[in-house]
Length: 307
DNA sequence: GCCCAGGTGAAGC
DNA sequence: GCTTCACATGGG
Image (cartoon, rainbow, N blue to C red):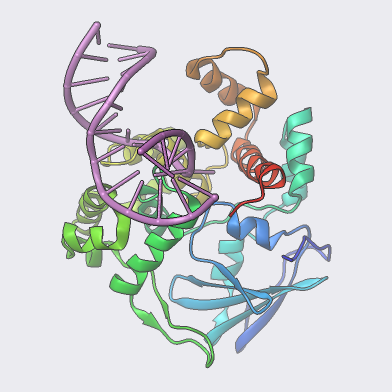
């Protein structure tokens, strides 16, 4: 049902054009469905043969064709670099694949979802979303984020016949909300963490922009000082927003993948697992992680087709 | 009812 | 140090 990856010419293309509501990008090995549903971003939905979402201040509709990606916005755009950046269209994907370990689990995982990419999201949105993610299923995270945007985001213009859309709320806006209002978005105990981090961000005590300039370990340390942010959520933000491709978030799925695929019939503690991921997967370990995560979920659906 | 979900923080050894 | 538990909420 979803589009699969396609092949086409290579980048770069010019990102600045005369203002237009649609733009066509040549793409190669890009599985849009896998990328937008693999638990990196939580605001995309498939409708009318296309993917609809919000990136920053833009309502966006994406359609994958055999040789290209067509993007449509609700207002004219001159400079499309924000979309190229978000989708990482200028990333050398082929070169990256060569750096992953040449072992059976990675071969199986990359074959199962060839064309799965890592996005480059807004740090605040990514941080806030993953604070809401703990012990929640992806479907539920999507629901919570949707409610949060409807209630605290800014309405965006959408083309006729499309439902209303909202920006992701700023830290300042969430900081002005009450914990009760946030809990009404069904986020439960996570409301206290989100509110506190929003306040720290709105007052400048935490500066998401500054982290981009830091080495990955310092950036991780800064993130983990925030309430509700441990090693897993910190690594998600490092990987999905800041583009630290060595970050390797280990959640229940990835832990299961590592144990099953690399240590079958052996009892290994989490420290051993940590040592393994730190040394085995190389400079683009985060990509390996995303493939393993998606692979486990796809495999689960084949065996047990729920959801 | 029971178990689990892209975890974290605090309390207990 | 490591292990155990509470924390909201909804789907299967």
